[in-house]
Length: 255
Image (tube, rainbow, N blue to C red; front, side, top):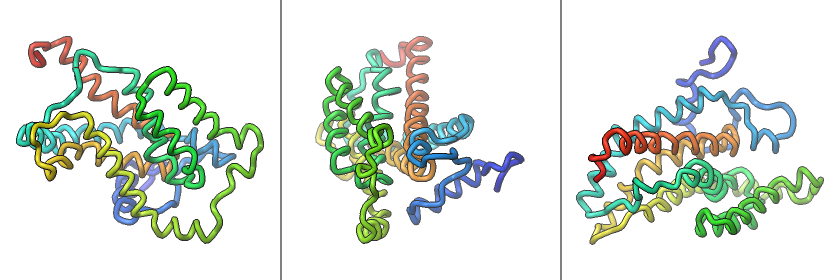
């Protein structure tokens, strides 16, 4: 369903997401699409800010009222505790660093699989080092390398995979997509400290990240990596804003 401007309504996009999760695939892209280079459209997609806000609100609500309580119950049952220091939250890391580096590691190569050979190891190293000056420099080098084929005309550097490999990748794409979502969620297990926590409870701790990763992955494939980075940052801003309000309005709740 579309609205008066011809854009798909949110209910239509939500249905597209559900169908994608069942049968992940590459197309079709969601409207509106930026005219011109597909490379530019991947990084600077034409996505309404209101639509990103709608997706962020849906994720906040599902995580707050459904998946979040399940994760909290699992943490309490298994003795897991969050490593997050609410009084010293790295705001810039959560709002800028994480959306960029995590999207490069877990989702950029879903469409640019030929670049994964060099991009994935470099971005992974940057992510594991954390937001330090040297890892930021490395991340900037990775971003520049992503655009070097466009700026310098290196056509050979952005050639797609041979057809036979593309066919194999398309066949395996559903597995690749869901594996990326599981890896994204699993990476957030480092946010907890464990005290004899049963292994079977650990996946429940990161259910919110698993759902968020699926939405971000769908958005990356359907709109572009720029859209998934933006939504990632907006999504992270919600819990941070809530924590900030609690610390300033009811600090006794976290002491």
